[in-house]
Image: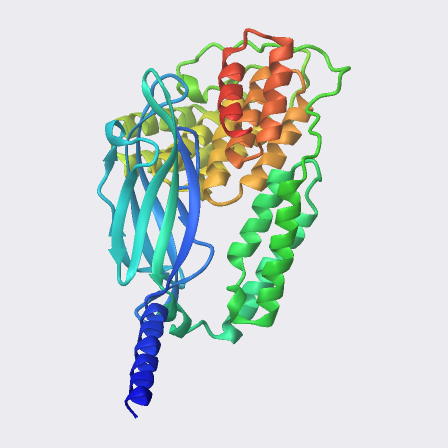
Length: 431
């Protein structure tokens, strides 16, 4: 009898341990991002949902960065992260990490550790690139940790509400499949947009099948390495286009359009020259610049609006509108303004990059890179445009394309320092 009792007690003890282990089992969600002075998205969503207050929600990381302009690379001063819980796109809870200064950032260091509800958020540095001025690139691995049982018992989204999202995701996937085969990064970016737009795989059998299908497509694209040929061998050498003289109403140097040689046909027969711009529009444009310089944003935008009402194709005013929208992180408005400016003068490398940046921030980098490629093909001998396309490809993650473009430039001009610098950055990541 005593032996039987001992066996019963032992069985109960083992069962209790098993329950404890099961209860304490955790689940993790991970993602990794590289940060540099170049344009990049200001936030990122974890691929799957995590539990919060008994329901499954999306968790978003907002990047809070402070960069100091030094040369063309820029150096990091400090970085922090805000983790947000979303419900139908609305923030219902958030928590922010303590800012980490550049002096304290090193490989392997933890630079973020907060809790939001019962979910732990950790940020660890995995790679750091430096020059003599400071940190130029930093790669951070993010991790959410939560109780697995809580996730399994959390309320899942209603299946019927996911139908519309799946239809939209299929439309994005269809767009991705129609993109050129020699632009794998653009296709991958669009396919990933489709996955983010789709309902979670566990909401329905259709959603699960979609995630598997698109995941397999992305995996195959990432494994393949198509040969990227930026130029034909018969193309002529680069032509350096001299900058225009700066008129009284011109944009600052970083937004000034590149002049067009006499041999180059006009891009648009309806281009409006500065001499054709009504004086009233020019005066309002000058007023807008003055207002912006005094931090009088509303007054400046009103003057700019009036200037563009008088002269809708006023190139300098469109650039100023785009720059102001970018400063205020109104990326969709900036994208529209830069595109209108490019419709008049697409041979402007600076504006091409600004346009790409605006598109990238709203998740349309794949579309923007295709437009930049069209402009590059239109002006195959323009060095600044090729460099702009290389930088855009680098940001989009198409490292083979960026590498090939830089190498092509250096073959024609081994002293091109900007192409050399970009190639070094590509080689650090493309191994």
